[in-house]
Length: 112
Length: 111
Image (tube, rainbow over all chains, first blue to last red; front, side, top):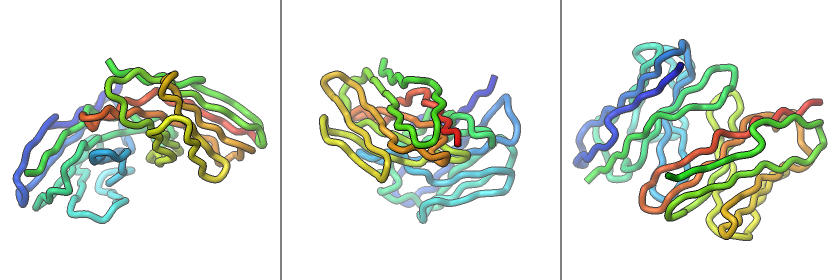
């Protein structure tokens, strides 16, 4: 069966520090991978998605970036965090066939 | 434990039909209920509902929330094949910024 894991679960970082959130999917190959953010009081906001290794599409201009170094690994990064980057980040995956997306456990980021 | 139940799990209709998708929830400190449409890629945001009885509309889609009975419905009027998708319902709890999703309703609109 397929599983998705992301970490860390919680993170408190000072403004201006770097960020790295990691996500891996197991039990499948060539998944579509997503990073979402949920800021306080808002719904899911799609940040990045990837349909293959090295392919990244950005949905929202920001100081975050994403990379997909391996087929089932998706990384969300920032060189310098802003206060506005605080939020709940969700990694998700699905297959190209359009099956429902599966989310990771989420990473709660607080920038102080 | 927070819970979101969507029904039906799947639905096949003919183009032009009107459909109603259901979402019931149990959540502590409810903040909002969200509907998403998922086609081949990422789910796209449809509605966020926070108040009972206020219908939200977007074209042929509309949704309403009943906070007393703890459910929401999503209506799609005069369906088109482009409406074929999985519709996700999610509930947000106040103070946690977490989302609890239902399993989704897979809608297929046949021509």
